[in-house]
Amino acid sequence: MLPYLLSVCIACTALPGWAQRTDSSKSNKPLLVFQTGFEGTSRVIRDVNHALENVNAHYSVDDIIGADTKLTGKNDWLKDMDNNPDAGTFMLEYTGGDSTRRTASIIAEPGNPDNHVLAFILKDSWEASERQVKARIQADIYGIKKGYREFYQSELVFIPATFNALRKYPGKISWLTISEVWNNEWWVANEKYGFRVTLGIGKPTAAKGDLVFILNAEDAGQKEVWNANDHPVKVPIGKWFTMDYYFKEGDVRSGRFYLAITPDGGQKNVVFDVEYIKQFNRVAGFRQMNKHDDQ
Image 1 (cartoon, rainbow, N blue to C red):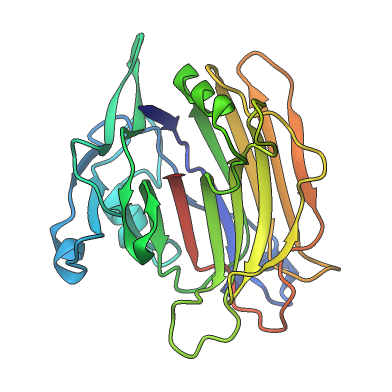
Image 2: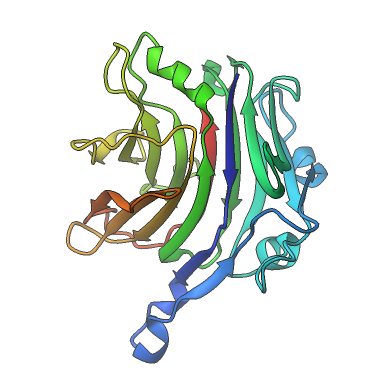
């Protein structure tokens, strides 16, 4: 069993597509999209509407409703996320399995009942979509209407010590996703410019080794365009750490991905600072965001 806990202040500030204009008084002003610490009335429910739209053996969804009343503004999952024109549709997606094998729930942090967390727990793997044996819990934000040309996001994350079992996995690990951002969705018919940036956890050797952060980008054929894995940074295990992201859509001259982590009680460490993101000519803004526990 590999539980994965995260208490996310999706303190997501963004410059949507409409903000990218010549009026300098508006173009650089960040917009708070949403924030939560999973407190107050926040709770996970069955997402009946999306489940009915996507009934098949490999797909089921939950949702989060309520509001984090410990935060001021942009804290209501329905009003400020699903019904916010600057945000998108949120759901918790499971690719296969059932509630005895994987769960996403808001619980009191073990040992700290005053803090609530969104806990992703995987207990098994199974044959899922594309006939792949895998396990997935995925928090989605789909349909960001105006697209984000750049955005910042901060999360507080805890990965428990049971994850250390993966250090002994008898093979390399290249697909254990933390999050991914889609510029153009390659599953959409006639979309020629599908592109995503994926942040994950990897193990670069088949021998026993450390778990490290990995980052790459893929095009519409799921072919790697670039990666930034030359200087691996170990993933903190068994302690809280903050992840601060910054994305900016662009090419080799203007795009950027930045990630820094700050372990609880420790110093900030820049993990990635990549000065290129997108390498296609079409500029549409990032429109899909996925947060995974995926293996």
